[in-house]
Image (cartoon, rainbow, N blue to C red; front, side):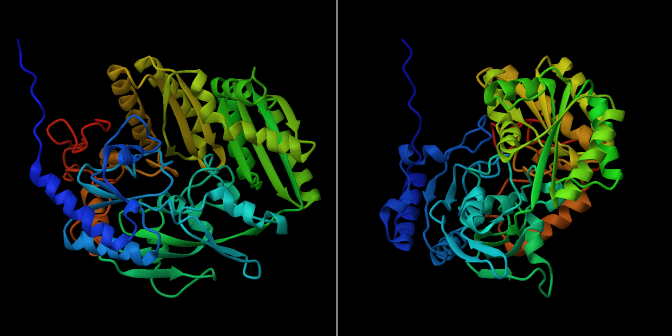
Amino acid sequence: MTQLQMPKVDNQALEKRELYVSELQKILIKKENVLSHSDEIKPYETDALTAYRQMPMIVVLPETVEQVSSILKFCNQNKIKVVPRGAGTGLSGGSLPLKDCVLMSMSKFNKIIEVDYENRCVKAQPCVTNLSITHAVQDKGFYYAPDPSSQMACSIGGNVAENSGGVHSLKYGATTNNILGIEVVLMDGTIVSFGGKTMDSEGYDFMGLMTGSEGLLGVITQVTVKILKKPETVKTALIGFSSIDDAGNSVSQIISGGCIPAGMEIMDKALTKATDDHVKAGYPTDAEAMMIVEFDGTESEVNEYMEIVKSICQKNNSSSFKISESEEDRKRFWAGRKAAFPACGVLAPDYLCMDGSIPRSKLSEVLKEINRLSKKYDLPVANAFHAGDGNLHPLIMFDANDEESLRKTEEFGAEILKYCVKVGGALTGEHGVGIEKRELMCEAFNDVDIQQQLKIKLSLDPYSLLNPGKVYPILRKCAEEGRVHVHKGKTKFPDIPRF
């Protein structure tokens, strides 16, 4: 009879953890704000990239900027890794913990500090949700423009960390175009502020550097965003096409013709049908591709732009063209697009949402390649595009409980992103690199490029303790051999994609 082998207990590691817990409780005062039992920390083992999980060593929930500063200073002095976390809605594994890290949850930083209508801005803590900012100012006729599909749940601090976009980023820009100031705590505990209530500030653009830095350079504790006055008129059109080529050609011609919509989205037939079944948005489910185009401004200019778009789409063989007749119509049209990802739940047990950027002119070419890869890997795929700015989101259908299905999905996703770079695009449009695309960074940057970026990281975090193992490849000498390096066939995260 074989005797069961019990796992070895690392007493030294346990003692060290207990010591850390004790010291962190002194900083946070409230013992309940330091979590270390497995039942307490399990909710933090993953983010929205649900295929991969790792329990942290300790979770801390600071309530003040001073506490954030003291925690980081303590961890820096004791060489303890720190992973910042907002709402946990990230899609690239950016807030995935390490087993020997302190995971810093910013969930208690969830208040709007100031609404300043005179300067048209809102000052908020980092875990205020994106949509909450609009809710706070809409009664005065204002709103916050960037609107990721997860805007009901995603945090404004996370938006800054990933430089999130949304369906209206074509006209109004991504997060970096809509923030005025940030407060950040560096790894050594230093509290710094960049920007303010004005558009420009003197000196280096450190706010721009921090935006999209994915938690590698500092922990965001406050954000000042600009708010906009709601436009006089907003109209949205649903347009069906018999081919993705016709839809792609329409996108290019609309933009080159001088029409800049507030938003312009494309979904393929599979996603259009799944979404309409889910939301009943009135989509043209028989079309091979569906475009949503929205214009805002004065009534006369909106009507003029809609006529131009209608003419362009008709020349490109559009099969249907429906314009919203009320605000309820418009909200219903967008409700479908916002619910597109959860609607995919009927198509497969799981899906992997990819995120890459391409030139608009390459839209049909890239979609053809995605369809070819779908057949190669025998995995269904549904596609959504922020068509106006070339940000694509292929949704690969798979079963996370099937190891072979997961492996093929990872390889499929990697090939999509490589092709994006090949046609002149980028590895990410808004979801970030995290761990998901880390080993693909060599596709977009040579070794000199990566080393220069790492020098900035190390100037602010010399021991590389803040969100380590994210964004940059584990082994960096990749340019010479033209291939991605991994560590003995695996990365240092045993469960992440092995591209």
